[in-house]
Image (cartoon, rainbow, N blue to C red; front, top):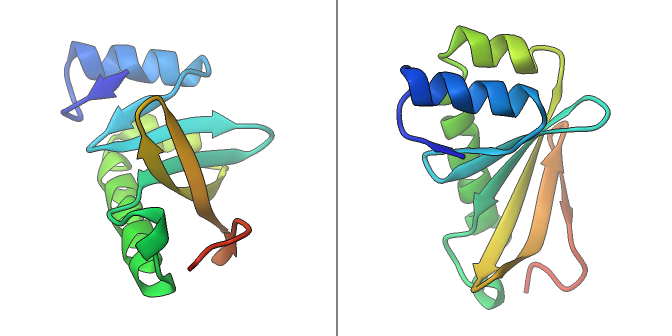
Length: 117
């Protein structure tokens, strides 16, 4: 469910669904609760897979963190994710799917085989 604002009935409904295990999207970044104790943030790369570099990926991951901080302005969201570690996944989307390029957990970036180019 996509939300555009941090208040209102739609936002409350989105957080109800999020708490029940569904993903939400805010400012183009996807969020979901992943077992056992992870908040996963899914960020779309601003570059094609062939052109992703470490520096470009770091900028995209940072943009995802910025959106997460904006979402944490909601006290209810903060309480839902308070004790969770944050994993940020950088994706390249295409049509009906997505390709994971890298992920960051606890400050460590792990690249998928073949990336960066």
